[in-house]
Length: 207
DNA sequence: GCTGCGATCACCT
DNA sequence: GGTGATCGCAGCG
Image (cartoon, rainbow, N blue to C red; front, top):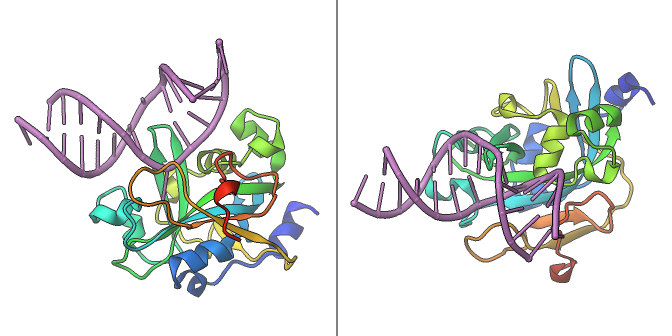
């Protein structure tokens, strides 16, 4: 399949998809396709790991209210919230709630599908399992940075599209890498997928 | 102002 | 399993 075929065979999720409870959006994003159409290439991959940052959640960036960094979280749903972490990596979120409510879904891992050579170049790395197996890695592979903060995910160069309708098993587990508050079962992933991040906790798997 | 730490990652042992 | 890279924010004064 060439790049044009791929683009035309995938349709962006409608904006209403994101106007639901954040944990539902996080679960339903598993299996959907992240697409970045650059001037040169199409980059695409299947979303295999997500994390919800919801209400009453001390780990949520929006927990202490609105700041310049988390402004996009309080903007309209179906848009991107991209922030820099540890001064060097970016993380991509899908904003889920109406204006004024700060909730989002962090995309934690993607299975590379299209534009793999470009991803390898962006990551200076050859192993396909390591190209997008973490929130910072997938942004580097896809060339996603702060320019995409506030960008719509329903149109334009960065989109999330329907995936194939293969039956998939979504595993629910706790979050990790955060210190505030209880570890809520708000992480979702494709069971036994080889492209998950290194921190998936099978011991705490729920389904 | 300064300090500590975080939704990370690669590299080292 | 430990460490360094290095930016924005919060908390403290």
